[in-house]
Length: 149
Image (cartoon, rainbow, N blue to C red):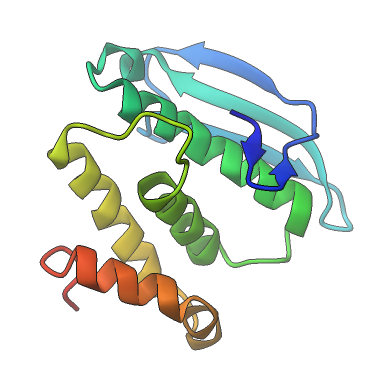
């Protein structure tokens, strides 16, 4: 779960479970940075309600999405990418990558993730969009009804 292609999360993080996260999300990575923008603390929070989903592909991809944020924080630090770019990349990977995980079977769950991916895609700067043009083309072709904007 900690491996992303040639990269692996090396930072030590804790995992906690709760019934309803403050953010309303199914899972969240809480990352602390020092004054230089380097990650110094990390905790994964997982809402126990996530485990009630029958779609195991969805459960594992939500958790791996948050682990992707840990990798981003470890690699880029606090100042490397904007939040929209971080989220877009993590949702992209959740839908189009993570090939070692079971696929999401429930189309409505995939569409929900795609909706969030498109939201963050539209918030990225032109430079960030330009460096992800192939990814954005794939998103627009795959989810044309969701991402029309």
